Image (cartoon, rainbow, N blue to C red; front, top):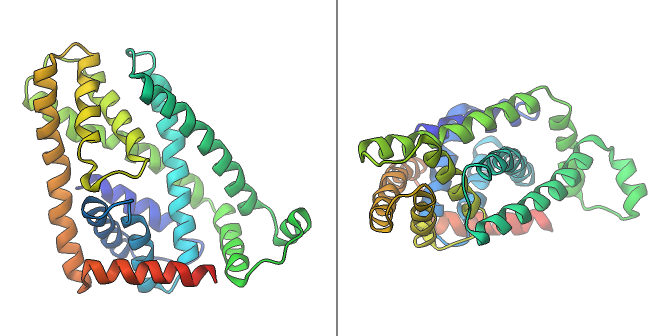
Length: 274
């Protein structure tokens, strides 16, 4: 649960050039979004958290969504660094190996496009694409320009690294509590592979894929299949149930129903594109 306080700090720093957003608002939106990701399909929590922060701060939803995209690119860069480190630790499953390379290409492409939007002026976009942009896109480019020229962007990138590594801690703690005969790199590799597979929209709570990845990660380091599968179930409960509890509390503080919140967030996202 505490790992996501780093996430909230990073988000507030990213938006600092646009508006000084309260840390509590960022954390509340993140916890509600995490809860939505656990109970709703297709990672609906990403839209919901952006909508919540936009509603509480009056920042355009397109800007909060763009800041969330910047977060994902930062996470992706750090994840790729960790992934290539894991390649030297053991033989990874082929499907995860291929997925890592595909994700790397996607991060490079998205990063280049986003960087161009941050550092290029709108006039150069008009000249390059020769299009008439809608008002929401013009507003988005203006805000991205502010974010891209802020020192907080680089601080947010460093916090992303700490946020990524901190996610190893609960896994390592549970490995030690279970007295598993595996090196500490097993926890690190498991974190990397779990984050890698979480990029793809999955069933609520990542049921099935979470257990498979966690078990295979331990089996790479020589743990018996039966022990690895049992551990994966316990790990899922330890890493999921606390987020559901804290998410319920955060949702109760907002005073909104999750179904209505999802509907309003979806409608707001559609309105932004008009």
